Image 1: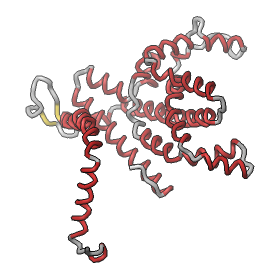
Image 2: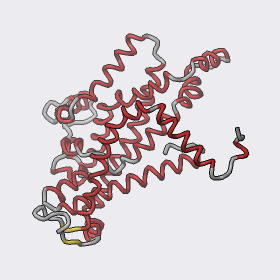
Image 3: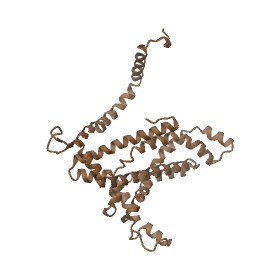
Image 4: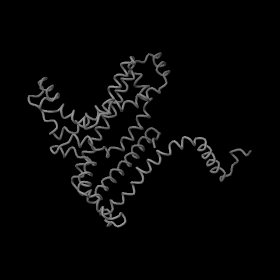
Length: 319
């Protein structure tokens, strides 16, 4: 048999291809199991991209997509010239950035504290109670928020008045400058326990011998968390963080739609609501598609930029 060092340039790629097909045959059952999900993603995530062509047309539902009038980049020009677009961009970036910072730091701290608990019954009880709000609909959560912040017997106003912090009830839901904070805190309450699960799973995979060795060296709990636990979940944290950066623009609309009202529309309207209001409801489908393309392109760029910075700093990559 000829040694690998004596192979010709043509034989190298052939050997790699043979190894690939050999491994694929060995893992054929895994590929077959993943095939339905690949087909699902292809149909619902890649096939609809064909509809992006309507952003370059004056789309009318009565005609086929091939019979539409082509207008080039006029929808994008109109989008970037609209003053409302920049208000929506501000709101989207502000709420998504606040949610990203708070929604990652607090679950990590919560997971660290849970990981340090010794009583398994109490630990599991707290964890179960914390992630149950994740399964509550935003319709119910928005009703609870409105009731808690109500001027007519709302718990928050009653507490502030009892502590003599305020003299009159505050109309929280009518103040635009408070809306971003209300959305962030509501989302944190709903998702904190659920987001901490994956960090707890990553902490469970850390070698216990590291903690034992640090105990021998005289390290306390906080030293162990800082020098062992946090470095041990760094990869998991960065993967989730970089993927979340890709959703800075596309943050959904349920929270803003249900908690918002006409008095705070200048602070509550985000891109999805903007596309719904000025695209779908006004039958300007091409304009709504242009908004969607802007969301997707910016999200992809943000992911690659964040991954590039992470790669430059740590010499590691997520993508």
